[in-house]
Image (cartoon, rainbow, N blue to C red; front, side):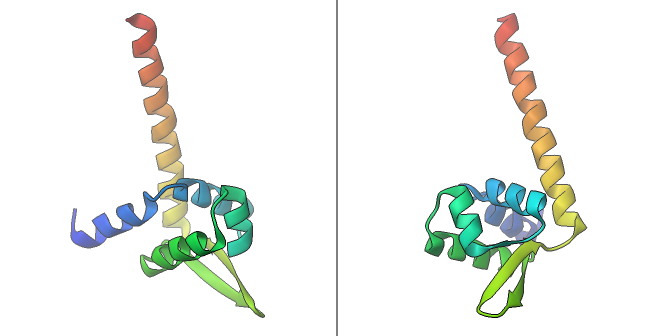
Length: 102
């Protein structure tokens, strides 16, 4: 994987960011404040995360007056999120099965 691909994965791996992706996926668009509240992080922390995600092209902002609405950048990001959730669910199921047979 090249450095750019690694940068994208690293940006998405921050604490609570998968939750942010999930929130954006479910609600289509959210403001920074709504995302921060939903994830239980400060507004400043959410702003920093969103700036990083925007810089990597994973999230885009739609300005509206004094605020911006954030959404997943495109269908590829949504597919990545869906595959990640599926993998986490599958990996959790495999781990639970191993514990039961031990």
